[in-house]
Length: 372
Length: 211
Image (cartoon, rainbow over all chains, first blue to last red; front, side, top):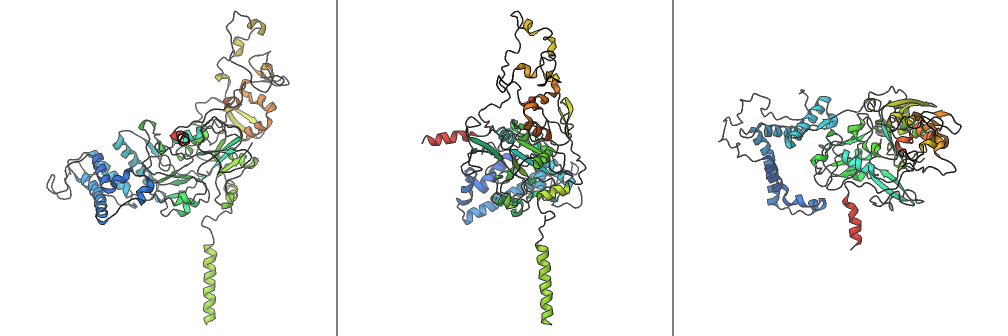
């Protein structure tokens, strides 16, 4: 690890020889107080969470914030509980009884907790955090995932075009997106919305239906999709108080899920309804998890962070099309490199009559609509 | 003295305003300018689609100023080569003793005044197709037949506004050809129910209307 690390590391002796099992008190077993009776990790977490937030786990987001009775006693209780979690991490790693796995897990949790902003990391640091996340997943579930942290390539600026006359409302794109990006099945999160609009009324989002379920295409209607438009001048990035979201050099607007504090300013700032919030812990059945992940893309999110379409960064930076483009049976979705004068997206922009939504806002979305 | 001081303050304020008005991303006036300027020195990217289309047999075509790959077709047709059966006249093949073939094909493309089997299939040489004027067309280049009538779709397809890519966005460009998405005997897309995975919300509106 380099000298210029941007976070504190807790040296718990993991990297030293195995025989060195003393903890801070100097004794090798019992008696110093930090060798507490062993609890399983899950049980410990459960107890800690229960002590700190208790019944709020079962409350909806709004109620969690506003429907909380807080007196001095419960405030102290919460404070103690969070201290307990921290002490737990230290005690597990110091403990002689707990296995190597839980020690390693505690070490990983510690380093993850105090790592820096992804945007400021160099390639080694990015690799280190990705490795930690993969190892942590392996320790928790016994299964392997592959996670990468490819940077934006030179001479690439991603752009997207949507053919309104081709879209038939089949919603295959929505499906593909949910499966590709490990979106929460419980809250039925979807990055893409397909709007069913009445012919002759133009883009009337107030009367559009994005939750239709009938045979499509319906008589007298047309369909158009919205998702994150990856604006070149993104208002969501401007308002983020902690720089957890930014525009990459290839034009993708991305989120560091570990840096996001869940204030939802970006959600309010986005004029296109492009951002989604996790009110609960995202749940995906183990068998359905897409294990090809990117740090900024479809890796598993946690409760209380923002997420959104990333133009499938885990695919597009490898040269593949986003899952929605690949899934569309009618070819209504065009994706490519805006800087390549010979790319098909450039041909569309130069030869079709294209427009963008709310162009007058100056957000410069990189998502164009066109018709045959 | 005081006046000189004022001028200094004024000058400083002016400078501060001048710099603060400059947008931090203000290199370009708008996105189009940025695309135009940054693509002037475009030398290609390190990302390539080659690995992605490795398993697909392709042929290269050049139409106008566009050169790209399309999937090879003949190896994908189940009963090619056609002359394995079509080595005698059709009247002999239509006898009752021989097993029926192509029974599932019903032409639903334009109307009977415009099209029948022989509009595209070459009765004299079943292994290839032919244009309206009788020129031979290889099965791999069947898009040339479609282009005879669907000229605007053909223009869009050449440019990349119509149709789909085989795998990735990166060069080399490999695009699906007409018959990869459209059944030439029944080219229209059918109406169907939308796929609604991850959405049991579908039940919600019905349940509410029952109240």
